[in-house]
Image (tube, rainbow, N blue to C red; front, side, top):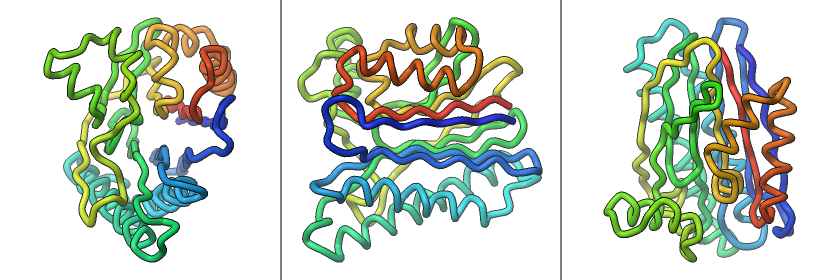
Amino acid sequence: MNAYGKTDKGLVRASNQDTFRIDITGDELGFLVLCDGMGGARAGNIASARAADRFMEQVRAADAGGKDTDALSRILEQAVTQANAEVFRLAESSPEYKGMGTTLVGAVCAGDRVVLANVGDSRAYVVDGDSIAQMTEDHSVVAELVRAGRLSEEDARHYPGRNLITRAVGVEEEVEADYYEIKLHEGQTLLLCSDGLSGPVTDREIAAIVAQAASQEEACDRLIARACDAGGNDNITVVLYTK
């Protein structure tokens, strides 16, 4: 099992409100999470960091080894619940944190089994050679328009409200996440990213860069460089995992 991640503030934003965490254990378990914070001043940074840390604390403490897929899903559900409670409590504690929140895409990896949790528009993909498949559905205004047939995929890339999300961790007392179960086969790569990558860089470009890179570190560097070449208008974060 191998994993690597990298984050960059991009070329426009004054600070980086993305956070990621990776933990690969000695008993063939992997825990991954990526959060893209929102909120004024430092609130987005704090929301993403607190959510990621709380999520990781919960999955690490849950003893996921040997658990079946349903049990792994319940572990993820509890981790998302705790992350949401942590950020919501902070948002209610101070006027400067009011309204802060974060996306969250996380994974528990047990051998070839991967269980994903998603809130917001950060994404999980599986890359297999030059092919790529999005594993999660965005919780965003533009994604809802695409699903309703009111906007094409191409038009969605340039839609002015494409960054408006419909779900976020920490904004409400309770949050609904989506959960996905996948099998990761030999040669495939699980990729988590914030919309700073998936927005300006096409899925085809992402797949090609991952396939051609000599290492996970090189792939992350090249993906971030490509997002910056495309404008770098947002923070950019990518996490790669192979079993």
